[in-house]
Image 1 (cartoon, helix red, strand yellow):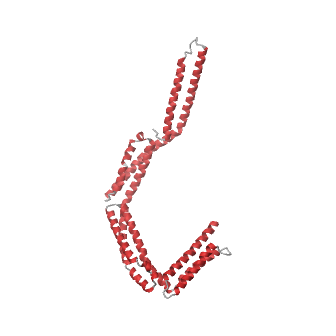
Image 2 (cartoon, rainbow, N blue to C red):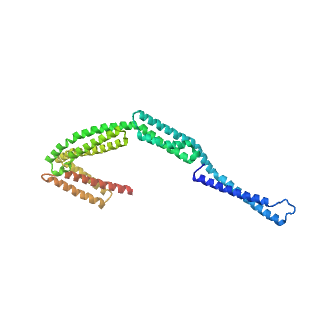
Image 3 (tube, rainbow, N blue to C red):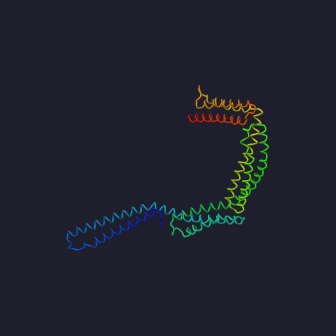
Length: 365
């Protein structure tokens, strides 16, 4: 039986049509039986009434026959759809069965490799009732529902098989990451030990503004590495218990902690290197920044007699800002870090103006 809305409507229409055919047929038979048209003494009025009833009954029969013909024609598309679904049914069910078999075999292989895969086994077991319904067939559950069930079972079983096949590699990848992150944590512990000498050098040679924001780096690095090591232990335990998602989550946390530590530790060394360079010769930083501003000014003037105020104002302000930063180097204990942050800000402003100009001119082209 077709349980679709079209199928149900067709069944309802056919039942209603059958009732109309019965009613019309009964009316015709009743009209025929009501009069003996072969009698010689049949009165003209009775014969006329009989002819009227018979004609009406005949017309009703013809009309109902037309309805039946139209109903049959209308079934064509529905029958075509049903035939298509029936043709798909057996292959779809067989594909679903084979997919379940493939998932089961993949799970057996994983277990043979020493992996429990409990979560995958539970998911496979959850598909067993669906297989039972597939085996019961379309006669019990309908063609459309059985096709839909076969598609769902196929998709879920194939996904399960793919995950099972990836599981050994996933376990190996977690093992590799555990080793790699342990090594990285140890290396960062060593590197973090070099931050304090760098800070001492910064304190000795530069003003407080140049190193105050780095004061907490050694302590924070130690905290981060300790937390990373704790998460590594949790990840190792999760891996031993084959809680793969938990292990992966812990390793992601470890990586984030070590990344933050790496950046902080590197920042101290980078700060000293940059401050050394600018203390020896600030001219290179000055020229680099002036070039960025002049380049933006040239672009702002390209094809114009006067620059757009939206572009000219931030560039003029940048020139003033750069001059102030340069003047700040003239004191006895220059704040070189402030100078570097100011020149960086000026270059960012120039780059933003260049981007705005190109976007506007590109959009107007």
